[in-house]
Length: 602
Image (cartoon, rainbow, N blue to C red; front, side, top):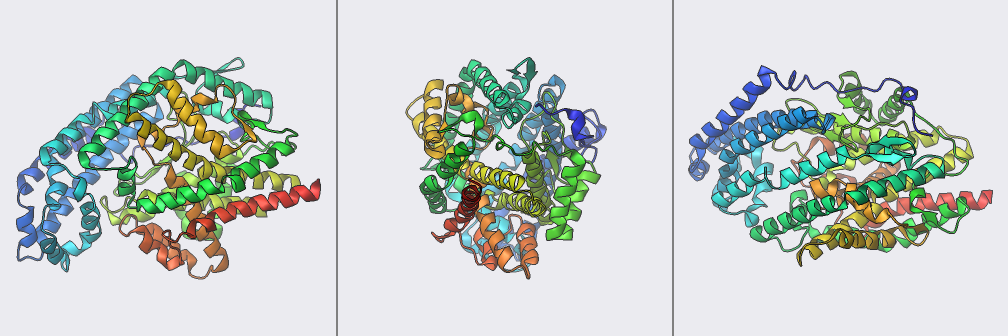
């Protein structure tokens, strides 16, 4: 049955006062105005001077000071936009919040046009000159960031073109992203007699009753279908926008810009995709065949894919219990990890209730190093919601640990961005499983974990394959909604296998997934992270001594070290073709366990 909010207890709503007291606060206006002035002054002080500063006899001290000032501006304006963005996420249907967010974004975009020269000019400094300046002295601190931005050098345009791209982002990609968010937030899905927003409707697809799951699925299909032309227009426009940017910058493959942003070699991702795709029959096809048998069917309808198992307890986790479970799991690994996570609860850094107009899904926003992260959830009390809480708190802990690197080097490339989140899920799952003695409940938990892993690995690689097909097809011309839906169905059928029946309506489900809009090709980071964490967890189980210290060092590095260097202390190498087999083998092992249990109880 649908979740009664009263059953969950009091759900926390975040307090954004650590950023600003309110939309009309003088502090917000003062910081925004100060940021604009700092950008203008920075350009006046440094434009055209960076090569001379690098070659100056002061050992790069002048250039180091310029970077310090640049980072301070980044932190200040990051605080402004974090506040505006989080406020907007709390209710994307509120016109006042939407205007506040739009105005702030426009003003910050205009102001930071004065900063565009900085990275471009840094990348025009002679390699030998810059290397000499970084060798010692104050500039050495910035070496990781300077080396990182130089990877962008082959794809940078001249200053005026970069400024044009930057300024037009407000009326281009950012505007279409906002249209998608506001359209999704405005949609209502009729499930029985109820008119629901997206998140509660998706939650109904995990209900114990098949009739409820089917009704939710049909409601999603009906509402998305009625709005499919809008979503197709948004998708077409953004795909074309990306193609134009890629062409001007010289990226050859549709995903090359994402690989560069992630600081990962394309061949590593190709190997990941190939390994997961080859494992479809051993993983998803095999599991869903097993699940269909548990339901007494030859094949499951798509609305049953994440259904609770028959006879499994309909467990609801009130907020207080979910909090306790996650914190205990974190503390069992490392008390410091639980101490950091506890601050999110105690200091109101979490917004948990599902509200009309609120951004769907869940995220952890790092804001800026001078503040702290915030977590957004749409908590419904289901077991997967507990895992989502563990996941997002993992992100939050990672962001807190990386913050001392400063605004320029705290952000973590997506190759490692999902490490702490997926590891937090694994810790929580293992704690729950260890405390479970009932065989029916244990099987339900194992099945739920396998499904989460399939959703994280198989489903996300299928998403990546869909995006590749879509962006490649878009190069030949605009795609109709039906063509996009056909591409979606082709990868879904391949990845899920013959034991999932993709019925009418499922062809529309691509339309609500925000990653396709906000972060093209982001999705493989989830599969990367899950396989990586499976391997890391194996190392932890076999050699726990010193693992916690190495793990915290990995998280604390933020973006200051490449992922290969950070994995080396664990004896892991993602470039090794056998690396992905380790992570996929853990999923396969859980399915083996379920099959053994099934044979025993048959």
